[in-house]
Image: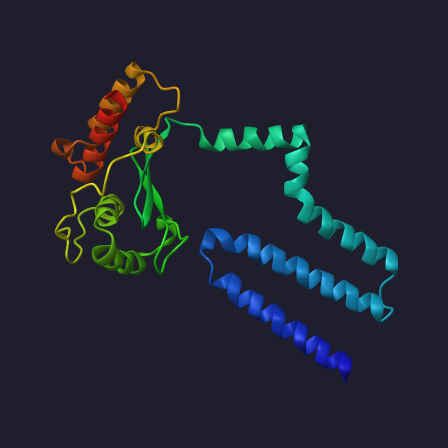
Length: 241
């Protein structure tokens, strides 16, 4: 009877962890499912060992593998060869023409300089930590309603993304709320550099060139977005002041 109660308690705990993992944004679920799978493996191995159905050597090897999996981030940090391989992989996956980043209280939006594509993630609200690419149209419309009430700058950024992802589609309350174009305060140097997609050591010539290149893609006269164009102009003026 005690063994049955223990198994029942473990099953309930694992089910709760599964529900928690399923509620996370899609890009975070894989890691949580992996952790859940490791937990199930440990439980099964311990049970088989205690009941005499598995030799202790097998249990030790399983524990070692699980431990190595958990220690992998630490190993990468302290072993230069592993760290360099990870950096090379990250560099290969992020290579391209650079990107600009604009952030509000609700959204962090990225513009790829090469393709002109927008991407982003939600920073607060009911869809916090979700990436826009993971959300379907119904979810995006719910996010848009939230932005319309809470964050006028995020609303304009989201509208740019929606126009790009759903060309020709119309959305309710398409006009931004009053005060939507006030900019929400001045930029910091780090924010201005992120908007132009530049590093800390950017020269005056690089700032001007980045501004010109981005305005060619985003100027309202060329079908771009007023808010993003205003942010790019504000970033250039701040850095050159």
